[in-house]
Image (cartoon, rainbow, N blue to C red):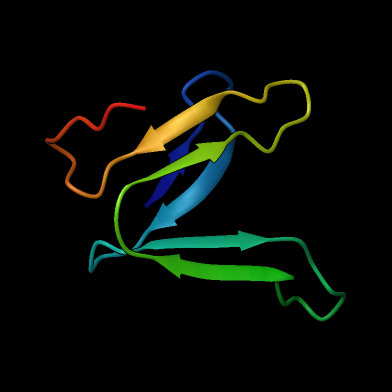
Length: 68
């Protein structure tokens, strides 16, 4: 399940079935991402679209609010 930017709707990060976040970015020409991270916990991620730049907050526990 992908989570998108709150402002522009660009796909930013994937939520895996086990609750971890999976971030993939870039390409090295062999269909492999240059950046590949698996993250546990809440995070803030700036939108990757140059015309947007909105700071998004993604909570590890969906029913909890994390102050920026």
